[in-house]
Length: 356
Image (cartoon, rainbow, N blue to C red; front, side):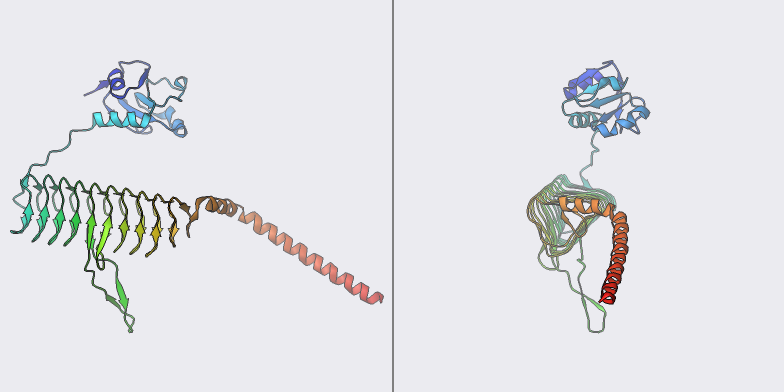
């Protein structure tokens, strides 16, 4: 149902500039908004898109100049938070998942499924597995032998929680997530072949973790691979065997952590960051996009580059790299000048010798 700017201002505590009766029916990004939608302009660098936006209204911050647009405005002290409230207001109602087991699901006789849990079509729940109260297994979810899914979890279609792995409460796994695949462990034989090392540990995902589509968390070789409480993992992330990810970490798309590495609390790995195995990364470390970390990192450091180093030093290196063609040209010129001077010195020495 469309709402007026007046109603949205009451919802967010924002100030109206323009027609308070302007009506909107949804939210969108500034560049792809259509008539009837409200967009966010919180960062001045995106103002360049304003002229081509078809939005009917904007949410802006207190520093925005209203004279720069004819669109009606909601001016909020915290524009992003206000926009999130508006988006939530227009969001569809959460989809209900009926409790019970779908007739097409295959659930082992000794599996324990809470009465109010929802097991969707074509799911498989193997022997000894446990599904907690309020949890939802959407169609085609696989829960392996002896695995445990805590309370109020949501497993989207195509998720696999393999044998003896454990999910805490409030865990969300998006489509294609695999928890408990074998770790990548092989020993090279004298003949040069690769002999598989049995991976007999498991994975523990703690409470309130969310893992994006097609991410993988491998089971431990021995013991446990752990993802700490509140951690959020993006799509296509790789967490290898025996890794420990601390609480409230952020692992962004295509980042990867090799075996037995330990991340502290509130660590951030930006997109495509890579960490070698068997290192310790301290609390609150930020690893920049495409950085490669090859050694232990002290708490609070910000790293960039491959191999990764502290961001200030890497930035200086990046600036220097831009000047490399000029530096090469200067070095060649200096080399020619040195050769010329050497030749002149030889000539002077020869003349001096002849004068004697």
